[in-house]
Image (cartoon, helix red, strand yellow):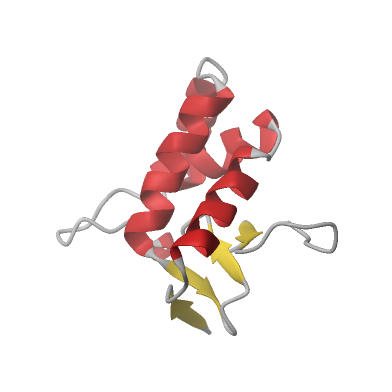
Length: 111
């Protein structure tokens, strides 16, 4: 079950920083997952609309995009969707929630 974001400004800052800390290969996969879900009429990208061929194409395209640009784009999508796991501990940074980052920074956080 997914929840909508309802956190402090600091939590959103921390989640964004945690996203930017991910390695480039992970960012490429996440970005391609977003791009593999074409926007619907309401502008959101839903994982049930996932197009595997489009994903593969976008994954190849992502190789030519720098990590910071990928992270910026991913954050824009994640912030628009505003979805987190049940309990609100982790922000979904992909359409289906298979990639998450915590809303806090620290040694005990896992991403």
